[in-house]
Image 1 (cartoon, helix red, strand yellow):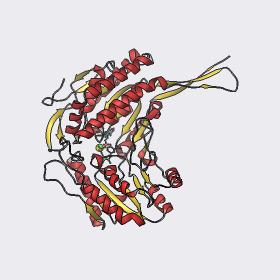
Image 2 (spheres, rainbow, N blue to C red):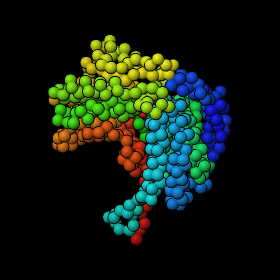
Image 3 (cartoon, helix red, strand yellow):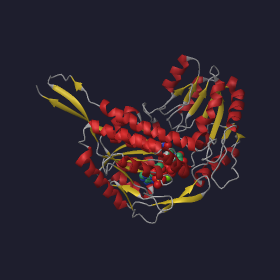
Length: 479
Ligand code: NAP
Ligand code: MG
């Protein structure tokens, strides 16, 4: 077992072990700006060793374990995660600055994901197909083999679980590569899954820089799929490299999601709930509703109420239970947001609230609402990945929708209206993988989650994710 006072190690083949990828790296607590732990880095050769031991674990035990046994282990992992909620939540809040209540919720979500896919194992099956020439034709869902899951720092535990659990449920082994900023809950997931009965080698956790380990993971011939969540640039690189071995990939690359409020809607409710639809997790959320379109007759009133609700949000120490928004994850991430704000000021946008740092060494930034934003402005077009919302009025549904769809992204979005036809029409037209009507909720364990266009492809969550970790085989038996 590691403690905060010694370097955290990699979790390979059922045990913690040293990394040979150079000196250990410090982890910074974003709420203090100070180092609180160190973590070892895997060397490139350890990627190959991990892939080989994963393959051995797959061939030796995991692939042929009866489905009921696999389900039992996944249920037990969920139970062990729940038992360790406090420790996991503490580590999550320390490494990324998330408010402790949000971290506990994230651990609960992770456990629910394991329960869902444990149950999914007995509902994951092929078909019998009446082929023209008679005989018996049936399909089988078979595991891909060893899968690499490369995950970001914004929801480190939940995203790790939503890649690992369906991959394991479908009978694969997984190499998990957490973000450099957030390795601790991923390591703990590896340890706890093993303690819950997952055979050694079936889930391994490689810490270290994506820039160093990424290419080796993506191009290793034993890796049959790379499931990635993160930036568009890294997604592109993975897609290029995956062509070498025709490795399967799924990419979730963020968004610039709309929040559309029609005048007929319960717009007060929309205004009251919109702050957390964009500022939750201090805006570091691929689903953040960062482009707010408000129909002209309610525009002024909406902005006033949205700003007032935003000013009420409590920004502060992640370990204070009253805190709703913690610091940003790193000084670099905050600087990148501040550059966007300078650009917005130069372009003539108005900052209605926020934008200040707190009197603290932590990476705090007060949530910002921009108005007077034009379609060509960077703040309107690019994913900021921080606490910035831009609000514009619209007059006409069709031209508003064409602006919505002009974004290269298409991940999520909200539509607020009491008109059912309008809700059905707009949700059909918007080019986005996930939409919500009269709410901002995007993520449901049971439902597919993923993007259109440059938000990526492939789906996390729901049974769609499990399908994505399997090959579909067809068998024909002559009569
Ligand atoms: P990123 O570089 O794409 O990081 C995501 C994951 O990919 C991390 O585990 C990272 O490891 C790894 N990685 C980095 N370079 C890699 C490579 N060459 N091959 C394979 N894996 C690699 O994202 P970031 O630098 O943390 O954030 C930059 C921007 O990405 C954000 O501002 C935001 O716009 C976007 N983003 C989107 C999401 C999302 O949910 N879709 C999440 C996070 C970030 P290291 O941490 O070790 O580099
Ligand atoms: Mg990066």
